[in-house]
Length: 344
Ligand SMILES: Cc1cc2nc3c(=O)[nH]c(=O)nc-3n(C[C@H](O)[C@H](O)[C@H](O)COP(=O)(O)OP(=O)(O)OC[C@H]3O[C@@H](n4cnc5c(N)ncnc54)[C@H](O)[C@@H]3O)c2cc1C
Image (cartoon, rainbow, N blue to C red):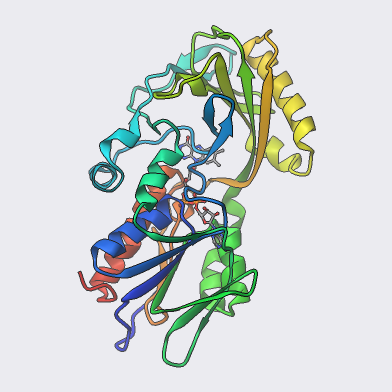
């Protein structure tokens, strides 16, 4: 949706809802362009699905497992804004299970991770930004002069802003826009609502090495979709091995209301079945992602209404995945530059 209006504003103060990679990319790009940026994040810290959970002796990546850097601008961006030290290739042997039950290696490619955890990247990108963490934006209202005011779930108001960028997953973005009576933008999100898959995650610590011969496996099991040795990623210290187990989208969706305990039991049973693990874990953590992965292969890149100075970005508008989140934010900023909403 690209509504061009001759009286469109120049955005000098922007609010960004969400501090995942899409939000942080947009924030950094707009800050570079001289725009005053304020980021709102409902969680305790930045990162979104670039997520890590504290565990004994360190942390484990519970969201994105690795990311690609196909777009050279993404590499430049990470070097310039996050620094060279906060990401590195993961050299672990990754395999997938074939229909016959054999395992084959992933196609050869560089796969990157944050160091020492995925959130190292988002922490670095958030440095120097005005970020209100623990603030869930519930409404956005525009006055007759075109200024936006954002209201959080506690009733606190923030503003004025000339423009707003929403980076939440589609269901949350839809609710925000719908509740703000922005029906045109909400309608543009509707086709994407069914495209997000759930994912139950369990992190299990084993005191010794499991000796599996691979560090990540994509399985064909109906319960366990992925298992990865988090301890094999660069910069992860600590004894033993932390394994991250992801439920399949179908199983995670069907069991979304199960308790963490039940989920843990079922995923561990599946891990034993798929990987012939006989050792017992001595520490366990579970996490439910209602909106984990986008199933759309390609997308429009971003959605925007120039007259309202509102943009919507996120991985789900650019094929899913970490790099898609970056590309989506870039796509919006390019559009806003071309439209004159951002001047530099
Ligand atoms: C289990 C799992 C495994 C994955 N594996 C991979 C992988 O191996 N490789 C890969 O490339 N990608 C993977 N992904 C996908 C990848 O994590 C995402 O594509 C990417 O991180 C999305 O970034 P984003 O900025 O678009 O969205 P998000 O990271 O979801 O950021 C949106 C942010 O908005 C915040 N927010 C939402 N609503 C509000 C509100 N009302 N007010 C304030 N804040 C709000 C959220 O808290 C969140 O921080 C995985 C994801 C999951 C969950």
